[in-house]
Image 1 (cartoon, rainbow, N blue to C red):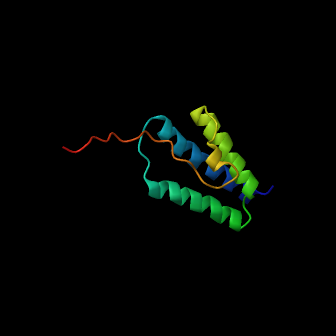
Image 2 (image 1 turned 135 degrees about the vertical axis):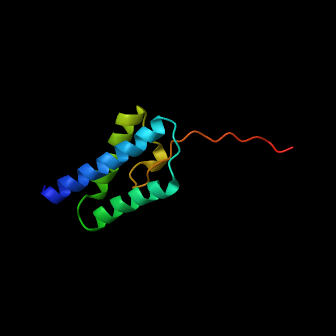
Length: 94
């Protein structure tokens, strides 16, 4: 494991942790931020800084550590970062 791998992995974990902390506090997270992080992880995988499995494991472990629940089944073994925001209140129109 070289310094680039370790640095990239640490960067991804920090970004995931910050995102999931916002989820846990009930804050809205702009979709662009989520997609940018997914793209960052995919780019790291494509240039060999992290493997697909390492990235999936990092998403899962950080999710479970911060949110204290299992990663949704739909996100297992993918680089998809699930959304965990509160549903916006919707009222019927009159």
